[in-house]
Length: 498
Image (cartoon, rainbow, N blue to C red; front, side, top):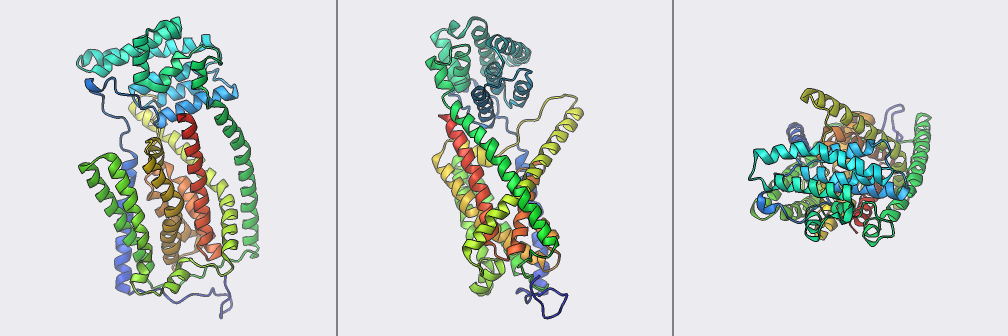
């Protein structure tokens, strides 16, 4: 710890502004709002993804296959093709079929399953077996709801695909081919190119991005393990230095008693809830796209709330020092520490990802056992991915700015600047870091099963704050994570959609 006039005791700053009454009120409101916002976000993560069945007028609506399932299926097919590594046992094909969230996606999965086989003969057999498995359910729907045009259309899709995989891609007439492409887009073209030579223009158009995607996967297969190795070494060295007291934390906690930085969290949560309500109202009046634009724009305006202590009378210089927006040893040094800290956080983050996968698998087993069926759960919702796949350039730009500018600045100021500081006055660094990480993670709306990676990142960002005293290192690490992951996602989506 920093030097103290009393040997053996850490130095403390004076208490932050606030009265006992304001502290009690802020604490009660913070607990209530965290629970409410986390509950709302968790419920939204469980919202049903499957759209309502199409009405007859929508049966031949243009295909929209750039959704989460469509993206995953394309990635499977193109990367396996580029690597020359088919799916001989059919395990990946079966997993893909079970993950299809809608009947149309179940049909689209047939084309992907056929391409993932070792040989065209095996692929055709795999596709035909899947078509036979789908037919009873589709026939039941058609018989129970004769007016359901989508059910009849799905049966026609099965017949068209059966002709393709028994007689070849040229078995369909122009009208049937056009209708299949109209309904299933890329997946229909994939089926209609089945078994053709790779230099055939129809097949070359489908697999044009396979080379770039495969190169990216191979590069990631080298870069990611190397980054994890370097990060693990840095993490171990940091722990050894910390245990040996060679790495001395620079954060100086305040004495207990203040409330103004806990108030900052309360004000931010109130603003966050207000933005959600206003965005929902815009969606009711205008459209879902308008609601998303309004939500992102209004959320950007919440950045001014980080200055709540200044409004309460805290001098700007003291606010900067208290929240960590200073760099006594130089900005570049803090940025460099943020880069090293992010690398050290990667192994912990991957551990969180593994934990989420384990929890998700357990949840699937338990829920399947309770339902009495072994079916796999649909893929979890991912709001940023939904925005990227929307194809709306305005939404993508807003998302990128929010993720790489707004989130590192505002979220770090709120969670590692204000909340961590308030908690650190009363509890140790590990407990304060975990508290800030939990609130940070459950604010993101990925659902309880998928919060461990965010908790891991939030905790490591808090340790950076404790180590450096400055907030710049954790802001840098937060920026790096969001920039790298979102840029990679945008590149993959661009290649898959080209």
